[in-house]
Image (cartoon, rainbow over all chains, first blue to last red; front, side, top):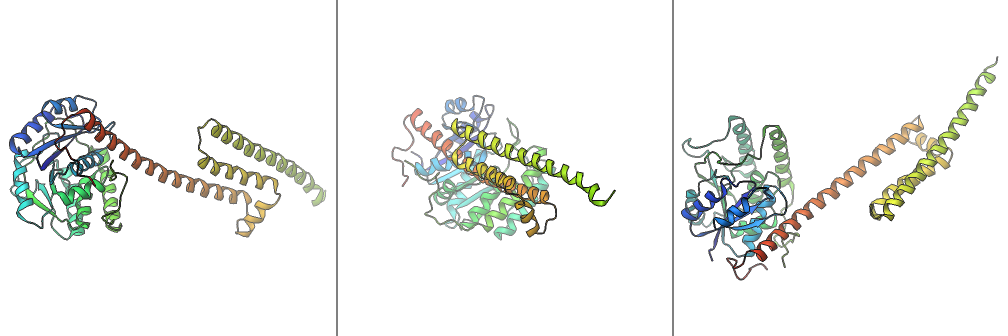
Length: 246
Length: 139
């Protein structure tokens, strides 16, 4: 059994999921691949199983936050020491996983490493100009809240160690979780480290964030950030329903 | 024609209208009672939530039966028109109720999420043999 796990949330990604899994196996063979099928109506789960991943099938669509959290609960249960999140749509290049792992393990203070598409030379897919404005705003707010420079807070390409696995299994934001998770981790003394990565245009599926909901997204995340900061840090031992397992 | 005789019919009509209004309000309160009881009897409404509506119906009934209570209460808080006091009270009641339901829905969503995650994880354990870890390390 590997000590490392790749958590791949996927919703109707039948066109990309198998390639993503094969790429992870090729680029980072020390990682087990766990696909969280978030209530897909297509053959995402079957395709993932065929490509050699383990698959957790949510009975209906719970949203990216709850899907990713399911992966962290699985990782905690099975004793994994490192978890990396990789989108199922082919945006993230699994060849960056070893670099993320190296960054995580090089520094004993590092518990949380995020692949940023805005660090380093401008290459690859950098989202639409409209979205970049939103991302830049989040970057400013998150940088202020966490007292450090964060360039790509919406990146879902991130790696954490056992400490982070246990935190995210216990408490993970819903709806649009990437930005909030950084602040949440910071509140638990796990500042995010960024590493330059190249992102690719998605090869299948559609983005969660369409134009009409982007304003809602913006307001919701800002509100959630304020709440996350104002909320008392939950004591480590507090047991939420998600945590108790048979 | 004196002022008194001109006013008399008006007062009379108003009194009849008031009685009709009172009967109507009592009827509405009784109807609410019956509907809520019937829903509870059919298990379509839990007692916990039925209580709120029964309380509202009781309040309506008391106001209809107790002559002048609404006027006195409205006067006490400085509202000239008793009807406005009723509207204000009803509005506050509905707002509080909606807020309460929002918290109930939030709790149900969270519980629903946890259940779905657990079912999915159990399902994986049952359906896909030889898990990568034979000893779950969960405390």
